[in-house]
Image (cartoon, rainbow, N blue to C red; front, side):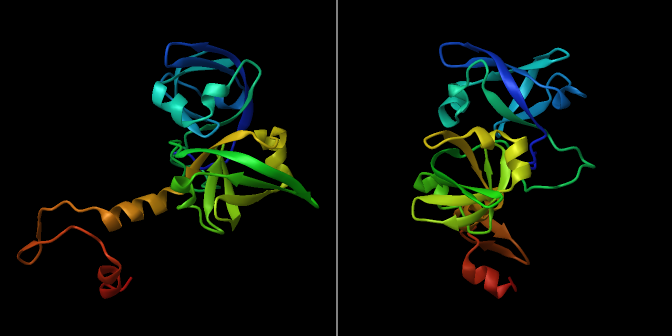
Amino acid sequence: MFTGIVEETGVVKSVRKGAASAVITIAADKVLSDVHMGDSIAVNGVCLTVTGFSGTTFEADVMHETLDRSSLGGLTAGSPVNLERAMSAGGRFGGHIVSGHIDGTGRIVKIWRDDNAVWYEIAAPAAIMRYIVEKGSVAIDGTSLTVAKVESGSFRVSVIPHTSANTILSGKKNGDIVNLENDIIGKYVERLMTFDDGVEKAGNGSEKGSGNITEAFLMENGF
């Protein structure tokens, strides 16, 4: 699990592409201070497993599914990337719950400055927009941000100078593709509200039910 608080920006040293996969080598500093084989590191918001490392770089395999659903397929030598190690049990929870399993990509359609802040408007497909909530959380290239406004097919975030300076957002331009991960809570709630297991439920007696958690059920039980 991650929190969306980017620890540092690294630089892609090489990308070795296979028929439908890739091996990425990334130069970094802070995230290598306690690295081990098999560790999880979020690269632009995508959870990757460390398969090799040296004092200045680490390697990660990227499978076909990840290349299809993220922007990692567009990385080349010299590309800057956001990096975050998996959260330690005693760490500070500075962002929000981020799994590193992105939901898809969006496209930056507008960037503008507002005094000390920079605004980004990002267009995204309906499958992602359905979970975007004003004042809710979203991870953009692994950076935890607050949604400031929601439109029919896009949303806006406002970025403070510290975030711009310490992530790759400062280098983005109109038309760039970004990885998006919705707040995981909304997705689980939706699944629980619609899932039907079709088996009998045990309570004070045996009772057959659909397994759905409905709005009426929640209200009846004080939620």
